[in-house]
Length: 311
Ligand SMILES: [Zn+2]
Image (cartoon, rainbow, N blue to C red):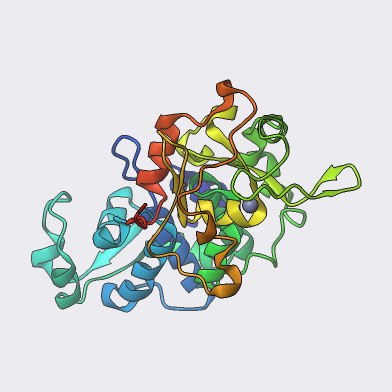
């Protein structure tokens, strides 16, 4: 029986994303997005693990926490438990209990293939608007907006054709954005006196602040609250690279620590690593200082470890 769009979206909304305490769950969402991109490109329903291993590893390294790539085979196997995904391979592997995840070598040697179930594949393959909706649903639930374009770009997934305007069922009100506190931005920018807390950038065009954004330290998608102590005023550049984990902020000294993975040439060095070891420009009241629990979450779940040494 063909699945309706609503059935498909609901089913994906129920996937059990791996979460242990405060750990970010990126594996399943990124694997589903990659599978959506394959459908958009007209690729067959089933794909062998070794065919997507390298690009998926790259995707996790870029958009996941530092530890993510080493467990990249987990979603390929465990997504099957949610009933939306099927596996094909040697019976000796497939008949294992769900918890006995094969290792990378077993998946490769067994030429294990995976893909959406035929019903789900058919629904998604024939409906670009549904693919776009599902992609937005996953991005909204798991990643800050600063990264949505980058993730889609890395996957080569173009969602521009079916817009929400063309498809009223897409209902923009269902997007995560709508649940945010609209005053968060204003409160955070005011706390930091309308300047980037890294570089001091404070452009105004007329009376309007330009290029300045309120970043969540602990992501909204990880249930980070809309309060000043979980916010930073950052220029667009520093916001983007903060969300990508190029730098983090130490909870005790509020010093900036850049990642060893962040490398910049002469022209951009002063805008980035030039701030390594410096303190942020603190908010005007102690009540607004970034809270240690949120900074620790960012350091553990977003920052690309290891950090450069603070000599
Ligand atoms: Zn800045």
